[in-house]
Length: 278
View 1 (tube, rainbow, N blue to C red):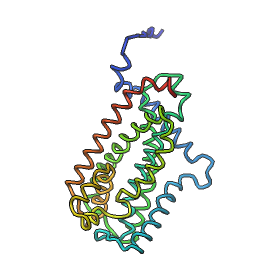
View 2: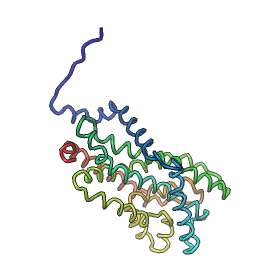
View 3: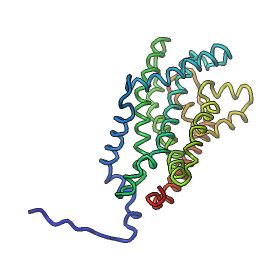
View 4: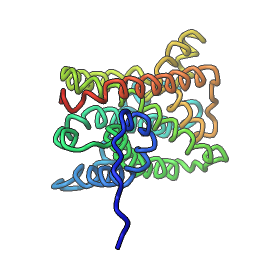
């Protein structure tokens, strides 16, 4: 006969053990992430191929317009490869932001019925975006093979920049998720932010081109964008001739981590009201 279970009701217990609960509910985290992966391309004709087609079309159009017509510099590498190294992390960031921002509203019934750390929902949405990103890396491998580009030792650092991309997406994701619960206007604001952010981020151009035209001040202003450090890091790790501007990289990375702290703080501050507001 098994030992009787002991139920402890303690004031503030959920607050004191919140981070421990994140680990205790890891199976729920895995279940939600796997569910979202299955639902994402359910009843689609070509399934997960959309994870390749969407960024591939963006790369083709961007390389054709900015590389072919505008003839922008590409830091000594084939322009499609440079655009690809900027497009893939941007798609991961934008998809993670969009998916996580709607994760709480999309699981309103679950939130109102049971307790679990609500941070699991936006985190699982980021994981779904990461799966798409991992699949889309096939585009980069294909382009590098096409242009006979061999990876250097820098490629070993790519997991660090992928982790940075994950953290950079989690910060604004948590912030917009919490704001979207209280202010439903954000479901209209977020697509605009994503669309506008693609052009103010160095996706179709390099930050080196910005520095050559506007100097160090221009590059510093661009680095205020938290995704800039991720994109520059990807290009440094993938394109052997690209140099990393450490000052702007440190600035962008610092702002990304600061935004993560702000996102976690605001999410935790408003989390206890989600079930009532949603």
